[in-house]
Each structure stands twice: as C-alpha cells, then as structure tokens.
Length: 292
Image (cartoon, rainbow, N blue to C red; front, side, top):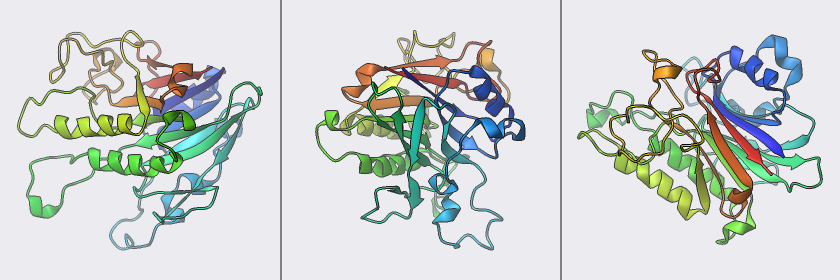
C-alpha cells in the first residue's frame, strides 16, 4: 500500500514536522507551501524547484508591480524510500512538451510527479497537487465580490492535468489529483453573489475527464453539526478548513478534495483527518489517501 497526504499548510513550518512524525507517509501533495522547516529538511525530498516554482518559466511582466510573483506553491514531496518520484518541470502553456515537462497555465496552481512504487506490485501513477487560487475580477466589473473567484483557477488546473489523459477510456490512465479547490461541493445558491453554480461546473468537468470524486465524504471524516448554511440537509461534506474566527472543532467548510481515474479509483481510499485531535497545525486538515 502507498500512502499519500494532501494538505494546505498555509506556508507554516510546523506542518512539515507533523508530516515527518506520521512515519508511514510516502508522498505529500502540498498546497501553499513555503520553505521547509530547517530541522526536518534532511527528512524530505522536495525535488527540483522547476516542478513547482513558476518563476522558473514565467516572464518578468510582474517586475515593478509585485516584489515577487508568488511565495507559496503546490508541491509533490517524497517522504519515504518506498517510492521513487519522477517530477514534471513546469513550462509555459505550449502545445508540445518533453517527457519530463508539464505545460502550466495558472501561476502557483499545480505540481505533478509520477509515483513509482518500489514494491513491484503497485503500478506507477501520476500524482497531482492542486491549489485553486482566488482570482480577482477585472476592475471594470466594479464587483462586490471581496475575494474573487476560484473556479477560474480550477478550470486552468483541469486543462493542465488533461495533458495526462490521452484516451477517452479512463482505464487508460492512472491519476490521483488532490488539493484545495477553494469551493464547496454540492452547494446551494443562497444569495445573489453565490458562485455555487459556477463551482458545480468544476466537479462536472472532473467527471467528464473520467476522474471520480473520492471525497472525503462522510463517514470518512467528521461532519459539521448543524448542517452549514448553503448545503442540503443530506450533504455528506466534511469540514476541512476553518476560518481565523473558528477552530477545528467549529470548522464548517469542505474546500479540499481528492479525485482518481475511473477504474483506478476502486483501489484508492480517502479520509479526512478532521477530528479535533488529529487536525494538525494548519487551518486546513490533512487528507489521507491510500492506494492498494
């Protein structure tokens, strides 16, 4: 069995220590990762910067506008010698790429690697860390949306990971994609500014690409009680994020999800480590992914 963890660590150091202390994790799909905690740096293998840092391929249009293009990234990190990772370095969104490249259209939204288990029993698969960054609407809209929208980034991610799909038959590929999509599955529009309908198009597109939503969904994680506003009474969503005014105990929103290729998904189990005791040192909880 190969064990992965997906986690938005909010550019904090303590989550790196939490991950190392878990002991049985092979691969980590990180979002909003900064520099590794120095005291555990020798226990993790980050891979080449080119697999996550868009400064490596992006133009310098941002110079004079921002001190840095971005300071936190999705990453695919190796924690054990039970697997080998073959990282894909990011390049600009060109039509033809080399075997070790991934054309990327969103800055700080995706990182990918091929996971090659050393047990000679589990077949290799592609692991993708996703972070659907908030994007501000154009100034001409004069919008009242304070944080913007995340579905634009999510659709860019879907376009980029489509490069690993070369056949209409989902059984022809083995992909696990997980991370923070900054949106709610199965949400109900409850006010005029709601983006629930737009969010739903993202989940529908995963399905169209042959990527099954694995959750986490109840009972594979603790439900929020009472049911959060904007969700139907029969929702199986489990909270994976809490705001600064909340705690793990009062968390309500599920923003983190895992998907796997249809067929391959039958060998993958997903659970939210979202109990108060196991939440961890970030505003997002860990998503545990086990591959048989």
